[in-house]
Image 1 (cartoon, rainbow, N blue to C red):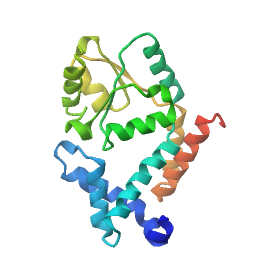
Image 2 (image 1 turned 180 degrees about the vertical axis):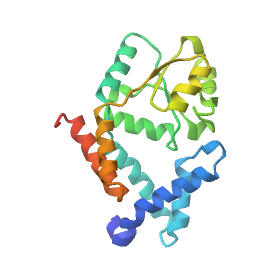
Image 3 (image 1 turned 90 degrees about the vertical axis):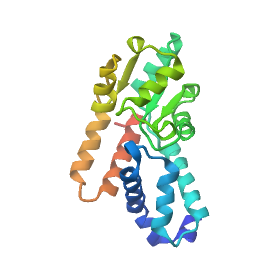
Length: 212
């Protein structure tokens, strides 16, 4: 459908336009809070010749593709399942342009046991982990105590420095083999970021299927 509707040339230029749109929205947003619809509104304005309906169909295609290609880190999923089995409260907190509904779909495509975990995402709450406000929102909604809270993530500012200042116990996630492979592709193929992204995706998929 999209090959016929959009044309080969526009498909080939989509990756650069999609990234440009996300950057423009982030620059213009308060506190760098972006959302998926705003990104694709900008894609629509940049393309010009494509209909609004077509742009929205491409937007849905992005989510469908994420679900098909999502890579789950097995160790992390096992830890989450263990916490649930031992009656520990688990929530996901993300600085992300996707909605909680979209993130939920992607998580379910990885493992259906992630179904009932609440998701707090910056795009819906208008604040982020990096400014600390998203942690305060979760504290209020979940009736949580910072001194009883353990937070895991890999971002130095949003997942380590900020929650540490709030009195939350930190367990920084150390990236494993998949990150080393990612760095390899990005260094070797840095002149063509689209090809390097493809290489990273293939490598992570192979890892998830125990090929390597």
